[in-house]
Image (cartoon, rainbow, N blue to C red; front, top):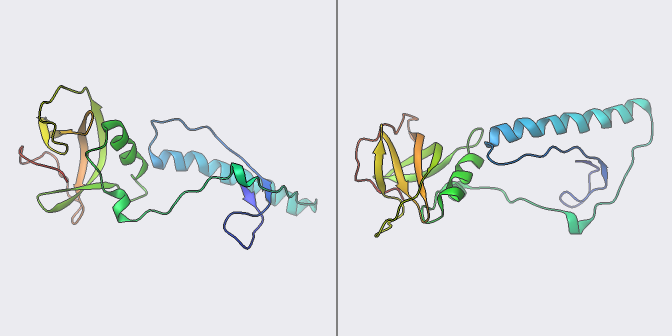
Length: 174
């Protein structure tokens, strides 16, 4: 949305809009790339209006249709393994490059999860979210509040070295 500046956050009159439907699964970098085309399209439309000298339209926003997103801080990147695997994977995809990647702690070290995939769930009697149940070719399968998630790419936060293949099976991610 291209809009006129206003005294309060994102409340100015609308000049023009461009949109593209994006459906999950999609990683944040791809969604940003897709949406950048909308920024370009709206910018060119406004530039064309200015260069032609035509009046720039102004349509009042409908406050009841407005949506807002809060800023993120480091705690928003922290994975809660009590959540279901689908929700965690979506968080991982939404906080990846160009952002910092979601993280968890393992043996006192911060691990950034770059990629993960859903694995068929099993009946687990003592479902302790965050524990590894399997390690498949060095990739841990983590028990979630509901479902299982296989970590396929992860790095240590401090030195950016790969966390994989995991060195220790008896690991709890916090």
